[in-house]
Amino acid sequence: MAKYLLLKHYRGAPAAVNDVPMDQWTPEEISAHVQYMNDFAARLEATGEFIDSKALAPGGMFVRYDGEGRPPVTDGPFAETKDLIAGWMVIDVDSYERAVELAGELSAAPGAGGRPIHEWLELRPFLTDSPTVTECSLK
Amino acid sequence: MNEILLRSLTPSVLGILVRRGADFAAAEDAVQDALVKAVHVWPADPPRDPKGWLVTVAWNRFLDATRADTARRRREDLVDEEPAPGPASAVDDTLQLYFLCAHPSLTPSSAVALTLRAVGGLTTRQIAQAYLVPEATMAQRISRAKRTVSGVRFDQPGDVATVLRVLYLVFNEGYSGDVDLAAEAIRLTRKLAAAIDHPEVAGLLALMLLHHARRAARTAPDGSLVTLAEQDRGRWDTESIAEGVEILQAALAHDRLGEFQAQAAIAALHADAPTAGETDWVQIVEWYDELARLTDSPVVRLNRAVAVGEADGPRAGLAALAALDNSLPRHTAVAAYLHERDGDLATAARLYAEAAHQAPNLAERDHLTRQAARLNARRSR
Image (cartoon, rainbow over all chains, first blue to last red; front, side, top):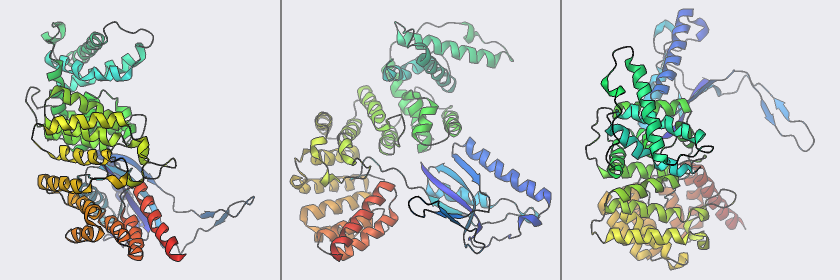
């Protein structure tokens, strides 16, 4: 019972093995990829491990407070930003090993030539609420 | 309407349906439907016999579902025959349900969800909210769990230890939401203790009561952690402590020590100290030795190092810590604490910051960051 975030990067992750940009795939390869992602999410829902999945638009900007009575300052988008998040999936699983296993499966989504992309996904544990028993928890 | 009363009837109603010949999965669905109906109907029209009402409604639901299921095939005799109510062995049924819902073939999260629904009488939505999981996901988790145990015979005795682990998980890893999972774990453990005479069941119940007693004192109004030493002991629930101690003493008298009794004994020694300074750390170290012997858990040895640091001084604690794998969760936090006690504030501040980085939960991370900040501020003055 631990929640993990699987982060997919537009940029910032090491290069995938099958590293061909999506706009150079065939339409059928794109469909197969989308189908794989949908099936994966549906399967996790059936196993009771799915929490959420969302994709992000690549464009965005930075915003910050600029002092009392002034509108926030916006800046960007920065083309040179090293890290760019493409989307995420949140899972709730019984073990870290299971989280790694699922991330591996998701990374096997088919890309160019119908072959697995072997994309690097970032796996991040959620911080939890604190346990009730603290001074002699057996876990 | 008393929701706890309603929910406390769940396992015995479910047991009656199963004894009448309903399979567990279908019976459980029918009982859940009856509970939902009761929530809507009872406030305006309370039944004279709540349990009888639930049995009737659930049984009819089961028949309806079975009819719908078999209409396409052939009608079975079962559906037209209204059996006599079963014998009044509700206690045994409840015990069997605990075993089934904690069956070793289930993953921990499935066993927790199934126990809360079939024994605890919570709705899927309540369980989903409590664990911050979408309702559809929780519904799948539960129906999958029911499929997993569908082949298990209802009248087979189970292993109490697996049930205790599930209840401990509900108590210890409960999140927030409308349902107070710690209180629910206590309610279910209390019921189990009434159904079976077992010192470890009593030990777990005592452990829960002793920890629950400190709940109000464990967090500051801003949600930050208050350590055991700094808690306002006047806010501890003395009634809960007294009950926990009494249950523990009766359990220990059986002379069949187990890990939950040993944990409860440690909690009782903390509860017993009027101030943190009066804690009997020497006895606590002895209980950790027992616990280490019973479980061989490195986490127990880590906690023992803290106790040794209090009983024999921080140097002794650090020596005990040196024997342990430093990749253990909270190892760095313990090292930071012992170094601070030993007067090495620079090392302590560095280790607190490092421990904050590794903390598994938000409250602990914030707590450790504050400790580092406190020492850094003192050193720069």
